[in-house]
Image (tube, rainbow, N blue to C red):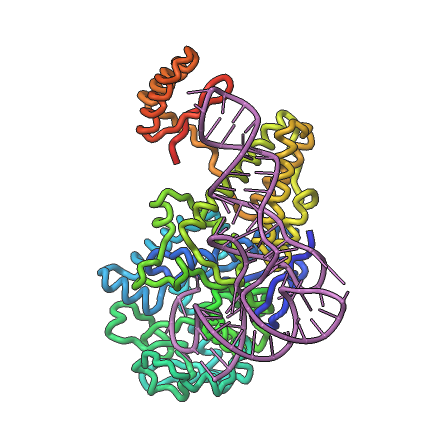
Amino acid sequence: MNTPVIYDTFTRALQPLQPADGATFRFYCCGPTVYGPAHIGNFRTFVVQDLLRRVIEAAGTTTRHVRNLTDVDDKTIRQSQAEGKSLTAFTTYWRDQFHADCEALNCLSPHVEPSAVAHIPLQIRMIEQLLAKGHAYVADDGSVYYRVQSFDAYGKLSRLEQRQITTTCGHQHAQTDDEYDRESASDFALWKAHKPEDGPNVWDSPWGPGRPGWHIECSAMSVEYLGESFDLHGGGEDLVFPHHENEIAQSEAATGKPFARLWFHSAHLSVEGRKMSKSLGNLYTLADIQARGFDAMALRYVLLSGHYRQPLNFTWDSLKAAQSALRRLRQLGQDLRQAAGEAPVPGAHTEGPFTPVYDALADNLNTPDALGKWFTVVHTLEKRLHQDALPAAEAATLYAAYQHLCDTFGFVFAPDQESPAPAEVQALAEERWAAKQARDFARADALRNEITDRGWTVQDAKDGYTLAPAS
RNA sequence: GGCGCGGUAGCCAAGUGGUAAGGCACGGGUCUGCAAAACCUGUAUUCACCGGUUCGAAUCCGGUCCGCGCCUCCA
């Protein structure tokens, strides 16, 4: 396959995905705030990042993937208090839910998943560095702010001029109480002095009790686990400003080194043509999807069916379409396996009939193009299989290649659930088969209806039948 | 106002100068007692609209209409 390239938000151009150190591609992705169930829009970002990693690895490069957990911030504190739980108990619960969803979506676990609350001393250390270098100042109440004016390159990622940043442009944003302590409206909090509503969630610092600001955790933890300079930093497109801009300002001011080399941002997911929001009632979670009888893989397929840089519109129809498409992919895998028979299955690589698919992925993760090319091959293989024109050895090679491709997309097919039908359904099916053999079709059809009424379908083959749960 | 994205078949969605991928849905067919499943096969003279450049444009340029995102803590 070709060397993967990615659209880099910083240079606004395609850049090769190669490790600066020639060995390991080190990247950091902003993870979830664990204060409730992640929604399918969050998962678009995480699934795309998962794909990025898989594609880099398919190209033969080792990766080191770090993704944080935001478990101390306004929302986690507010919500845990509202529920009368300790911050730890609260965030641990939602972290576990998040992990379960990731697993269902077959997202690889990051190599390191640092928790913000577990790294407060590290964040304090970086704030001290910033203070020492004059990039930060302590306000009267003991909060610490980043002095945006002190960092010339501020705005270089989002290409916002400082003038525009400091001017509020027709938008009324909630004014925070601490606004008046800041030298400039564009300065942001590194450390927030303790407030009554924070309750017991307070940590000591050289500036008094309080808690870290939001942006500093990513700066401190990425530098800790990936080094002062690393290959790529990713997140949803909404994070470009201010979060990533602030991370750059913090990290580069503190270390004096360039921060992330490449910036990777994915577009948002909308639902039924509208932005997801609680008030519209269209903020779906994986559990909502599953409650409607779809499995997580279908969601993964939907999330990859559009290009990551384009807004993607989620609809229930698109999930249905994904489910059907996925069924076809799985079917071909099974057929190849069967055609391979006893032939030894060789090791897989990216060269072969699926190379165009890998090349499409390597081309800025063009998943729609890749799926198109994949199905083109699927079609030719289906045809050959149907004509019995596939020798076992070739089928084995293709099967290995096919599996590897499914892996690269992160598609995993649950083995056919041989969960047996209830005894009464089996008895009906037996009776129907007997009736059919006796050419008593009226009775056979009547029995089939009874089976259908019980939620099963019966499918005849030449020498028998199979029962499957009705979908 | 600033930055940015988009309008391609019923739905989803690639394609950034060489004559419209692919998926789903739908129609026809093979198979079947009939189905189902599986496979075969068909379906955009056309890419929001108007001009222009070019031998040639969905793709480039100018303009118009429409939709969307971000602009201090939302992936």
